[in-house]
Image (cartoon, rainbow, N blue to C red; front, side):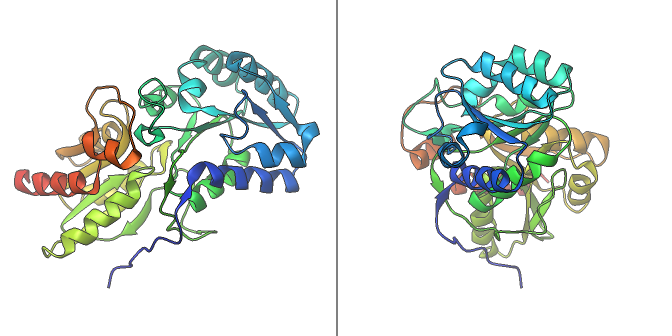
Length: 319
């Protein structure tokens, strides 16, 4: 009998980060937080109220914030910088590249409001290229947790992970379905949620829940589809991904990101190195988003549960 994951109560993943940051602050005086005028939106406000002497409001000056964080990291602190994903990557790419990665500073970049499900703020704020941008930087670790509980754990792990970390999470309330202190969550390793002999869905972030729902729906057709949560997009768990590629030619990837330079590329790269497979990708098809409700946007841009089901059927037809 395969496990049935239930929604423990929908919560926004950004609040999971806020809970983890506050927990870290209680335990370690080296933890500091920096915000670019978005403390409340990124859920740093509880930390700021509890530890005002360890919170730095940098204003709408993200480039300066990254520089200050690099200096704090070089002085023995563990800095978390928090802002929206589009500001945390596109606006300050040069500063992250030079002051953080090239300089080897262990700055932890907390990027909220990633992906289409940011919703009503529209295309200018729906960052869909950030995984590719951050994965390309030498020494950067990239984590995209799937729910509130996992985002809290990701923050706890990121603090003590060697080197810089990019932590990606979102704005909307989404199903919270993993255990609060899940021992199967390890940075740098895939997380197998469902085993299956007939195919595999590799998913990340908010689309992990949709992948699970797709797998459950396909059970009615007599199909056992594995669901693998690839929460760490760098370093890549090549061995773990290859293990599931070896079992079936039916391979689907699902991500709230552009078609290029994200999870689909990762799975395809592993496939070319180990078990050549055609990977059917569920992703944004090289376009910008627009304003709308999160679920409506997932449907319009081909990222819904129904689209993942269709992708599995396509992969089966082409196997």
